[in-house]
Image (cartoon, rainbow, N blue to C red; front, top):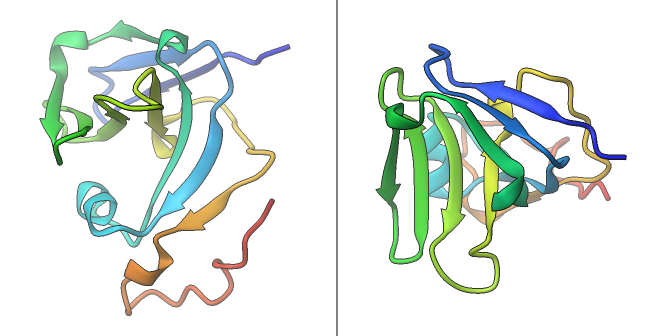
Length: 133
């Protein structure tokens, strides 16, 4: 049985629900995710796009094409990073959710750190990089 999850942006202008538990949970250290989050890395989990329902604030979601095939979505009221997705290719029908925006508990069964070669030097990450599967 799938647990429903709910989330929102910082100012709560955008509220959403997930009709499936996030999968493919990763903590991304690439420069785009770091800049988008303003943090050492960004944590995301993916669901089929059909499992994401915007409950409130769809008009407050701004989309930014960070590359030819990647779309990033954020709240244009408070700036919270919400989602990213591919505009084409194998996973174009999936959306990745910024896990920090979840309002309900979520504990992934497995997760991993990706693009660790791009990690910032000021973050002591020696205890985080071992893969947890």
